[in-house]
Picture 1 (cartoon, helix red, strand yellow):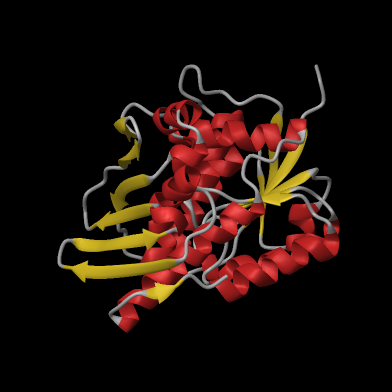
Picture 2 (cartoon, rainbow, N blue to C red):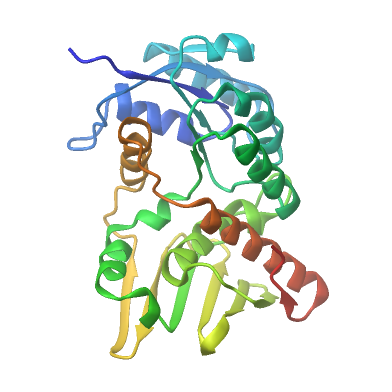
Length: 298
């Protein structure tokens, strides 16, 4: 039997910790088992995103799958080859990234990268300082229906994109950053980097943001309250083609990319695109506050 790549989960306030571990060493649905990884430890700590009772329940499940759950970071890091920062509250991302960046172990930093652009730049600086391999993404980037269109339509020909998704309500911090990241991630997967300005409008139904690029390119992001659907369309010179998340195995799609990162050295998403996502999210909030168009701050 080949040696597994041992990982630590940092954080227990998100369902991702449970869902990823299930696909690695729990009762994975048929065809969704992810091989080659082993979750050996999990660090828990309080955040506004999950109460202690909820974390107790999750701890019991993790321990049933053979994971050591601890409140001591040094214990969580013992004997691991890589880290998954699975912290639901993005306000904690920079602090924990500072604690582990110098270890030199590859890191998957779950979305969003940070709670704001200043903290995202601080994480970028730590990446450069320590030369650590890291990436961050939402699972929505890896929709098979979206990836299929991206393979068909050259990047230079993607003139217009309309993407939609839910606007979840964050227990703390910006709801746009916390949950809008899923929808903005799809936009950046389509349009790449280079957003220049954002104009956002809020109504009872949610938020609509228009993102302006050079050369007449444009994106529209629709974040709708209590409508749990994702999708969009890409328009090029040949017409409009749509995609949705129906019948998608979202966690499996993302975890497969995480496994390739750890086991094969792949870099599924460059840091430049992750920073672009963060910049657009910040610009949406800034535009809502200013009640007008704002420049994208990098």
